[in-house]
Length: 367
Image (tube, rainbow, N blue to C red):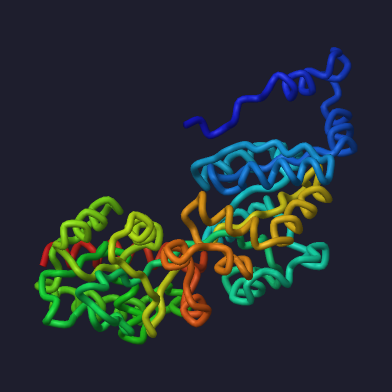
């Protein structure tokens, strides 16, 4: 799939402008586009439903031009290259990548006062710590994913704690991604699996990592197989090779939607997740139109329901669960108390975290 949509004949004619003078004066073209009601959005495939975009364009007269991306780094590189004259008004950034974009002055702080429907955003996301950097909010959270405890409900009736992953009755019937589950094990042991509180404290961090590493090594006999790809854990559940797993929400949701007896939850010790946000680009030529789109997304839970159905991620918008059928609710939503247990990845201290977790992962696998 190309990361950039091909221009239509209509947009190509507008780009050409019809005269050499227009080509010699791109700033004039920019002003004309803004006055004419244009909005340039860079986002991922299946994030913005076409039906929603069609209605937004009809209601506002704003032409929305979507450029698809498949990588955070590509967005960063494009915005950096364009500098003070971006061709994008809205980009899509994961919260744990904020520091890179903000430090390079690629985003503008979000003015929630310009979003009348901000109240329709789930309270867990309205002023979340991960979303506030340097005293400002930087984007509208729209879709999220998380690490959950997946279980075969025919075999495991309840799982309130991550402790069940170490229960001898499920010996050789569990599975996880070692690097990801290490940070979950840190949370289970009462440590900071996201390393935010360990900034400048490498000795404290290393001690916590070592405890989690040793816990996993001690209980290696619980694990049927360490996995890397979502398809692996899905197949193990289908074959009933395992009854319990640490799983990203998307992998578990696919099994649930396909009718398998799987449920995913966030145990009492909590878990980690990521959140995609729509961000207004610094010096965006059509910032006013960008805010109109953000407000329209929050105007109705129907938009959030459509976004979560087609993307497979959980919606951040209030009322979405009421519009889903029972199977969709099971696959794509969580009770509010479980949503509030999710610690969304921070951009703070990522290098220390990556280095220590990578080393511990190798040690667990080699033990």
